[in-house]
Length: 214
Image (cartoon, rainbow, N blue to C red; front, side, top):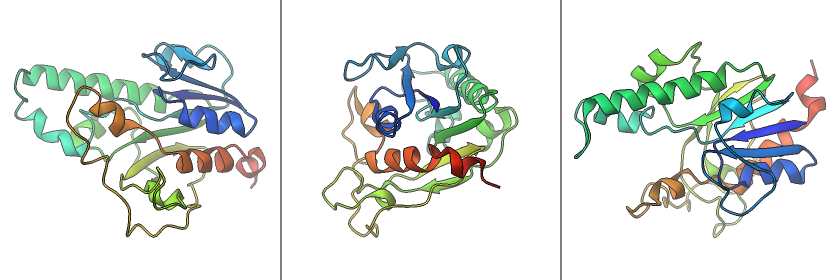
């Protein structure tokens, strides 16, 4: 399949689909963390119109103003910011989510945390998320990168829910994402995707026979 992985710098999801034999590309406003001829610097909404993509996986659309955990900033702006700026960022985030969710690409997966009501009201053709998973559900090594607690919600169109593939039970899962040290790169570390989850996406969503089966 022709796969576009939007809002991804790391290339984790892109590389999982590449390894599975698909024509996969990542896209982000920022350059790839590791140089790659499979990364496009640009707005995912522009790149969506470039060709006949079969699957769009938007993994990290800006969620700071959409997520339920940050709704308090819409009522009392953080230091140095204004409420007008907060609501403008909410409108921009909802518009991006809407454009990705309503694209004419046949198969779509958009990842985001749980949303608050103001975000839901602004998203065109909003539907509840199809599934939420934890990275540790796709891991096998307690010391590995997948053994983390981070609830991940998927909005899916034309795709089945993922089946967990790991052997971990969550009792030893770390909370590195939630306890990330404050700093200029904190947002990047908190949005980094997980290889076991990416592998499951490539294996399960990349199987055309399963997707077209009655």
